[in-house]
Length: 235
Image (cartoon, rainbow, N blue to C red; front, side):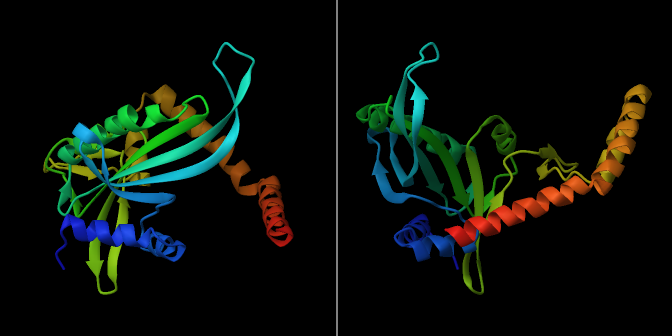
């Protein structure tokens, strides 16, 4: 089944209207929280496909780094989604960054920023990821960003989160995900100077038996389970 961006937006937005819909999205691989808004007009900065606002709670925060006075502050998370029918790449990233700037310039000034704190995250969703350019290497230097690809299976729409770091150049010239295997680590250690390599081996020999045999680890895990079970039963 071939989607247009509006179809994808409709499906996600409609699911965001109910708790059951949000649970369904999570089961299908897409975690969304908060109240959803679609086609958010940000003036000359453009129209964002989907924005969600999540109230995270409140707490006492210092007025500034030089003050001992505190103020009650509410914390919000703003998630800005850019949906693409096809692959997601640098153009989609620049587009959603423009929306972030528009949100900061047009929306945030309407709030008392001393009493409200906003954490903005961006999400790119598309059918695939652009691996023909250096797009994925740019992601290593951007925080609070996530990538999702979607696909239709026999039971409907599914999402899969893709890594935003750890990409490397393959022999073919296209980026590939860096898989850290034992073979990779052995090769890495093999290229270290002998003095450092010996130190690594000594640390490994010292720590491995302790990790495998330390009974306090089992006790800590048992205590955590008891705390969890008691908390559930009391609530």
